[in-house]
Image (cartoon, rainbow over all chains, first blue to last red; front, side, top):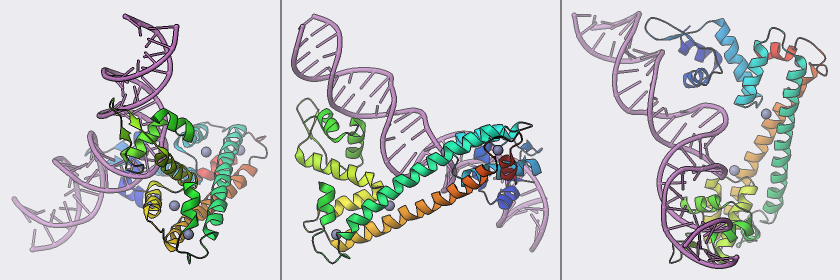
Length: 128
Length: 128
DNA sequence: GCTTGACCTTGTAGTAACTACAGGGTCTAG
DNA sequence: CTAGACCCTGTAGTTACTACAAGGTCAAGC
Ligand SMILES: [Zn+2]
Ligand SMILES: [Zn+2]
Ligand SMILES: [Zn+2]
Ligand SMILES: [Zn+2]
């Protein structure tokens, strides 16, 4: 399988695949005589592993730790559990931060009275 | 007021102040004979305006639009209202995305059974 | 046989919003 | 007169990609 087909099957840009290889997340592709990268099912599995992890919000360092764990013959559940725990806490604190913003923003927006005012109090409040 | 004092008063790193000036968010500081930047109350107001906006999650482009509005003699409430509306929607969609992640992560974590297993099913699920 | 087009290669530069120096100048206190 | 705190510019690093530029490879069609 060449990179284009892997890209299509995993719905992941070719540049991203090459990038993951370059930073050592994805195992090196086998090279054909003409220099083209060649992939097999194993590569596809790893790429999907990475993509699923990214979709769950893990950053590159966390994905690397996950792949390291996955490379072990018997991945230690406790390690995975801890990694998930830390990450869930990160996600939850981002949610809290965004909700705080959203509430402050909605409170500000209410001062506009549907935008019918001619001199916006929001600007005044931001100026302090 | 020199940059150090402004930095201390606004709790904002000097580098960030210089950066905001460079990208044109903050009005140019007046220069003293020795080349040092000199600030007055007006600058402090604008810096705080920017910092408050950033704390509400507005990106640089949005902050620029906000400062443009704030520079008008009578800021149009409707414009501010719309800007807030768009931004609130961005924030809400980020919240939804993060909640989706958090739920998926918690579901995965539950499969670990408190990390007492010796072969982690999370890894298997991520591999697909 | 030759060309066209899709595909592949590398390497570099750009994005957002800063942050961290390196290498140097200025000013005040002891 | 010198140590230390402050200031200057400019460049490079961060994250996680994305977008070229410049060029090589290969199969199909004329
Ligand atoms: Zn587990
Ligand atoms: Zn995380
Ligand atoms: Zn308003
Ligand atoms: Zn926004």
